[in-house]
Length: 179
Image (cartoon, rainbow, N blue to C red; front, top):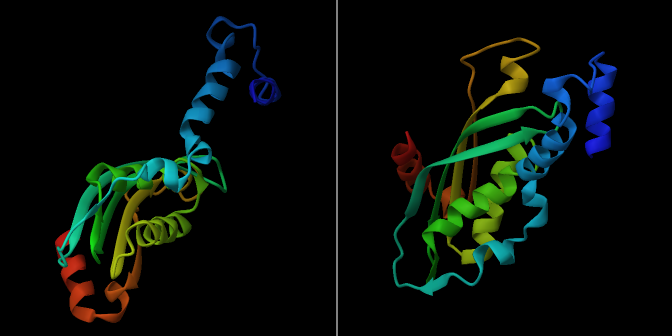
């Protein structure tokens, strides 16, 4: 990866021997590995058995989980927040695991639409919930720094599974709580 970054920088017409660029290929490779560390994680490792019996049957919601991802089309960041909710069916997942699941999928080359679905399906798989709702709001550098250069555009995506899809009242409650 380091060699590839060196080639990219040289193809821009830069001198890799210039003081500010001497270690840039190494730093860029290390940064890219960090920003895409979700590829080295699995759902089982992230959850790590943190499932607990519960007779709660009301909505569990974690709001404003910050996320940092990379657009698979331009390799530019998108930054935002996720709101994740589920209706337990006999067990709940540890609170921090919800944020870790968001991070695992965000730290891959992604499009927001797919990431929203992957997070919802992962929460469903782990908890066996009666329903799952995920809303993600993000700003995309590929739209802000290039192309149409719109600084205030924000993309919102949602995914509703189970009772969040089939029950309008559950969906409405979730959407009102994240608004």
